[in-house]
Image 1 (tube, rainbow, N blue to C red):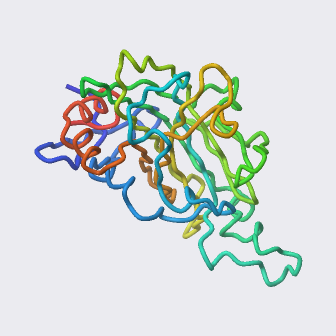
Image 2 (spheres, rainbow, N blue to C red):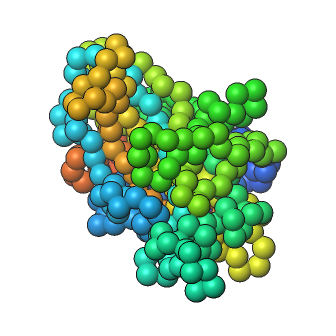
Length: 307
């Protein structure tokens, strides 16, 4: 029986959870945060993200999407590592993102507009990210947590991510202003033409032994420093890549290829889970996540849900 319980109520049929106080500085658990397994499945099959990532114009910035190998077994030559990642963007906010009338030199990209540059217009507000995790679905229809990147190693903050130009053109990047928070995890900002791209620990997989059938990625995030009705419109999503183990390039010069890109959701002052799974059809995802007790049991042991 768990001494600490993450949820006030778990949205799974025939399951209940009794709420207990959770220390705010516990890096593994956050009081009152609810993960609905229905939402885990549905987030990959909605028509669009909650908002459009500013400065991208790419299909992946408009809706969740799956990579090259989503609809077939995860076993192919030399691609033997999986890397989890996430992205923090300013929201494009559609037509509300316009040049400021008091600045005739402002371009249509409106990089100084408050909706597109929350880093400049809301300098005290940051995105707090914790616990980037990778779960794998194996050939025996069981789940296993393969990686938990706690984002707490202050000696090498750059290992967790960098600021990149929003469309990743030329892979241009620079060191990000990463701060380590007392509750665990890191906080960052984005905007003014830059995103924050972060990642976990790459994990090598024995595809033949595991018979890997699916992948689930999750992290938690919130806004900190918000005062009054301030609303900086940050978006966040998570995903995963296959990494080529021999360092060579393939498929047009790539050494990594997308598994899937999860749904962009707005970051709020309340903690939320941001998720991604790699199942090409909703029926397959439902069977592996909702109807399979191994999924909830594995996440329970990982500190994400309680029964």
